[in-house]
Image 1 (cartoon, helix red, strand yellow):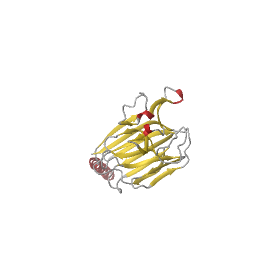
Image 2 (cartoon, one colour):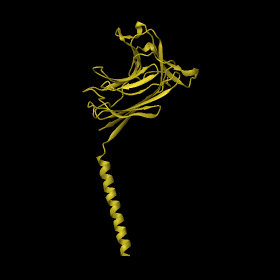
Image 3 (cartoon, one colour):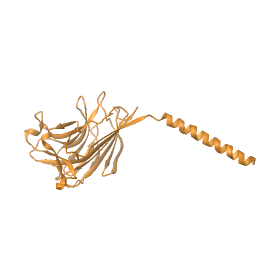
Length: 242
């Protein structure tokens, strides 16, 4: 009987200690708040986007004439209409999104799908890049060139690339970003077609006293070739740590 009583007391002590430890851990966790944003173009408008740059090249279309499958088509030409402030190095047409909660230590996830009806020429095409919202300095970017896609971080290092892109094929992308002005604290993870291809790569992801936005579309050096990219299912998640 004494042995059973002793076991009961030990069991209760373990349960009490576990409860106290769990409560302590719970109260030391930072409180968080989540923001969510999406654009699947189903409402046939682009009003949820922050800005349209050279909007004459941007149009919502029904892919394969299917009204249940709207996507955005971004087309660029070599005419002066697609220059930015008359600069031939900035031949562009883009959609801009400003996620909420971009600040030191916060986390942002951005997801999207893209398709090229024809591969781009073998030259610079920045199609998804982050830029600071006051000084307009580019922070990090994805580039498309022929059958190659690559990611370049804030230091200019190409941290990931893939050289087997195919025309008329949809690809999914996801970026997980930890915002920091410190290159040792900022992080970027990339999923390509749902496969993790870059894991917690350290880089500076934020400029001092500035927020950031992302641009989707085409930024290239001026050329006569007409080029098109399709964009769909854009989402962003923002975890704000108080």
